Length: 195
Image (cartoon, rainbow, N blue to C red):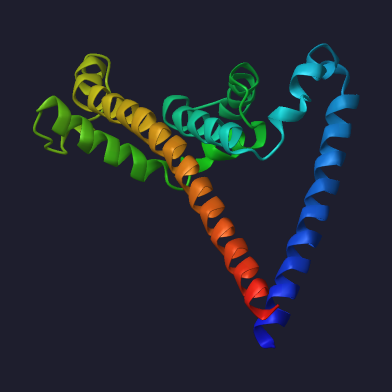
């Protein structure tokens, strides 16, 4: 009895959340449609396939967002939206996925990219070059010791995490679908046994 009540309340909560998200989505799309600067591109930005939660468009959105998170320091949301329009990806997912790197954890990602870049390039990391002062002559030296390994590491993160995100969304979607089908088959089997 308790499991049935929990399942029905969970289903009711899911239906309520879907209605709330739909209301927010309709309001956001209405605001975007009414914006005067978006009128020339409104039909592209407001295309329904760019806002639906479908496995292919969500996977492309995650890949775009993860890639841009490690490649661009600024303007990632707008660039993610433009790439999503061109590649038919989910715009909100792409914009949100760019927040995998943010001001709070950027130092960690840069340090990790720096270490990975040193390892990939075969340069021993001493740590002293990162704290060297930046006067006119040493900027080039500093960029060779710190900038190049960090850029290589960030590039590797951009490509690898975007591919992992794309594949991960597809795998999670497939797992969810498989679980739903199994549950449906169990319910159908239990109904035929009880009948």
